[in-house]
Length: 178
Image (cartoon, rainbow, N blue to C red; front, top):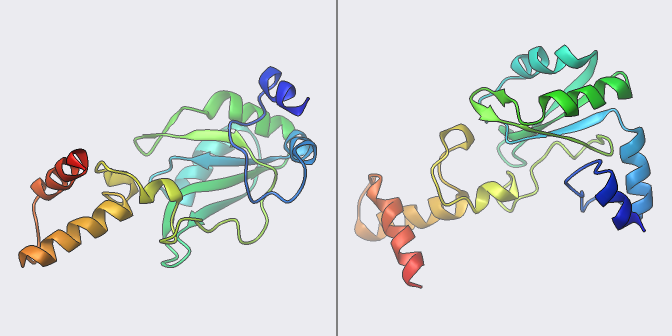
């Protein structure tokens, strides 16, 4: 039954696997929440820039910038908590898909921020999606972690201190052959 509800009234396109509870408890938390998850944020976007944008929809209680667990640097997401549910709903309605710092951001309801959720869950400390990225994205730190590691390994094998952009193409061609 909960699945039918999600199809009729999508509160979120994302299900947080770390939520401790049933799907019904999760949906109830989303319905009451004044917290939003903001994704696809540039690693270089500041909290001040976020506040300037999100305060257009209502009074912002706080913004928590997502951090790389190991390096403690921004890793591309944030939580925005509003004073009222109406402000949070306006934000999802009007700012989801808008451009912030040259990136199209995703704004979605979240069940609520708790300490520890500000850290990336990827193996390398950042977001999982950034580990598997196979293209260059300057706003999110360049190539994905796995591809960067592979490039560094190729450079070390070839005895080069530094490679050019052709290295990424070589790795892509190698993966295509495999």
